[in-house]
Amino acid sequence: MNVSFRGGTHGSVDMDALFRNYSDDLRRYAYRRLRDREAAADLTQEAFLRYVASRHDERSEAGASQFFLWRIAGNLIVDLVRRERRQGRTVPLEQAALLADTAPLADRRLIARQDFATFKAALDALPPKSRAALLLNRMEGLTHAEIATRLAISPSMVSKHIMKALRVCLRSLEASDA
Image (tube, rainbow, N blue to C red; front, top):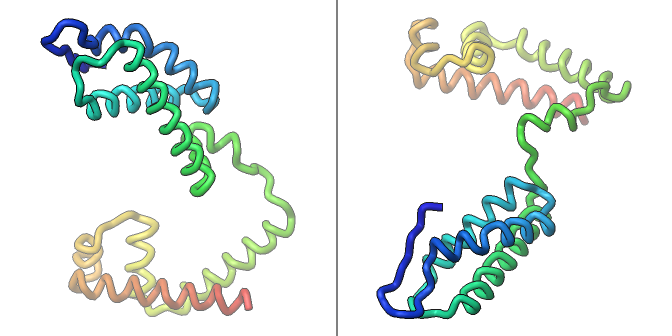
């Protein structure tokens, strides 16, 4: 952490020394509560940043600084746990493949096949420019301007074609679910 906050008066807390003395303990504390090394490291840095941002009295005692740091970290942990409960815990992309069900159940495969057939039929029923605009955008990743050039239409028409195609496909899927 490259924050140096040294007060000019005798007895003030040296932020570098505070970080050296307490960052490892604070990180371990956060890890014990969160069981996530990256989150614990981020939380430790955030605690020190908030401590620096909230310091009004540069002459605070080292013991009081330590207590205040732990209080900040505890509050951050509570906030993080509450947020994860509301939003669900995020998983790094590298770990997502490990969590994915590689063999979906038979009923899910059947539903997916039916949805694909419904979607394909809806696509096939679209006017050619609407179908092309949607596929070029979603499958090829082309921008509206690039699609406009390919289809010899304006970018605003590309938007209209894509929106029409999406509405038709969505209605088809919704009708098949009913």
